Amino acid sequence: MIPTTMKAMVLTGHGGVDKLEYQEVATPQPAPGEVLVQVTATAKNNTDRKAREGLYPTKKGEMTSFQMGGKPTLLFPRIQGADIAGRVVAVGEGVDESRIGERGLLDFNIYADDRRDINLTPDYYGHGADGGFAEYVALPSDQFHPIPNPELSDAELASMGMCSYQTAYHMVTSANIRAGEYVLVTGASGGVGTALIQLCRIIGAIPYALSKQDKAEALLEMGAEAVLDRSDMGNFVERVKAATGGKPFDAVMDLVGGE
Ligand SMILES: NC(=O)c1ccc[n+]([C@@H]2O[C@H](COP(=O)([O-])OP(=O)(O)OC[C@H]3O[C@@H](n4cnc5c(N)ncnc54)[C@H](OP(=O)(O)O)[C@@H]3O)[C@@H](O)[C@H]2O)c1
Image 1 (spheres, rainbow, N blue to C red):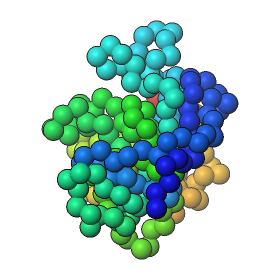
Image 2: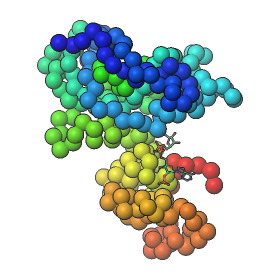
Image 3: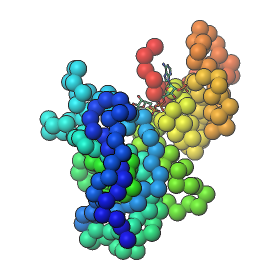
């Protein structure tokens, strides 16, 4: 039995964490073509914080977040949460009931049209529509992908974050990274950085991490060939040469910017 109300962490406006309120709200109903997902795990993605703080400005000095058709798409109250793992508990009209019980992960994009091109993606769940900081969420059935893999817990699945992995995948494919190529990843310990390191290894490329020394062990375990300490950039070129045996990087995946 699905309750008519649910608990949700509701964003009430741009600002600090005090803008997030734990509230009782109506449980969404799955529309035609949608599934109702009981959320079992949601990652707190960097993008949730940035959106809350209004760090996606479209005009100088304006905290409006994305604007489609000239109007802001982050309207309040909004339930954030882009990286959603959960189980299908109900289906909308036109969706096969056999999906009920399925464990899966959301493709968080709100696509502009049938091309489903992420370059044309205007928005995402947890921003332009309600997301996973709640007990239930209604989602397009074809964007909730079944992932039965018993070796992955729901929390691990959500923390992989489709948002950061898709960003990383897009970087790797845009740069046309090939097996055997040497890739430098800055901001390596973050959401996108850890995804890049793992994706490089899957492709057969050799990822080098620019990070901090206290994170080196975890990054090496994850697949980094070597970790370069960013706290001392003085002799960076020499350290790179020493780490790669003199081979230059084929690509730099820069998640930090600046100098
Ligand atoms: N998360 C997403 O799904 C997503 C999607 C699209 C775009 N992006 C963008 O991709 C970038 C990275 O996002 P993220 O989610 O991976 O962020 P994150 O998890 O916060 O990681 C950022 C990393 O940058 C490094 N860093 C932080 N401050 C630094 C400084 N002052 N100087 C040098 N390095 C510093 C840190 O790594 P080290 O300590 O290891 O150096 C940190 O872990 C951001 O610009 C974000 O807007 C993210």
